[in-house]
Each structure stands twice: as structure tokens, then as C-alpha cells.
Length: 91
Image (cartoon, rainbow, N blue to C red):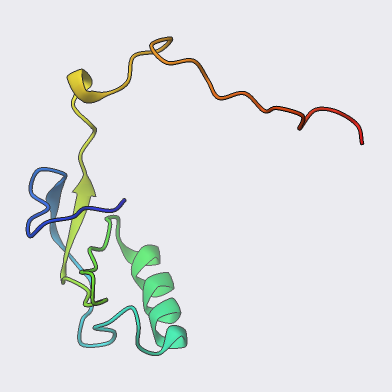
């Protein structure tokens, strides 16, 4: 999920005491091995999404992404599905 702006409150709720260990891995753009090991260990222990700012800095508070408002969701059948022109043909 990509959120632009300074606050994610409209899109996510805090997950209680679940937190990303920023003392182990503070930035997505740092060492990829450290990020991967930290993500695997954290996912094994708790639920929640991690918020990263545009510069890759990870926020310690893990969150639950909110379900979109019903009135903002596209209605089934409201838009035609995209066609796949020529993709089904044998070449």
C-alpha cells in the first residue's frame, strides 16, 4: 500500500504493542540482508504492517491496514473489466 502525505491515520490503526525493531533495522535502504532477517523474525512473532517513509525510514509502531470505505470502493459491474486484445490468440 502506498500512502502519500504526512499521516497514515486515515488508512491504518496501531497494532497495540507490536513494534518493528528499529534498533536492529532502521531503514529499508540499508543492508538488505539485515532487513530480510529482521522482517522474517518479526513476522514469525507478531502480526502487523510496517510503515516506511519515502526515504526508507521504518516506523516502530506496527499497524493494521483499514478496509477501504464502502462508498469509496468501486461497485461490482460499475466498470468493465479490461480486455486482453490478442493475448489469447496462438501465435
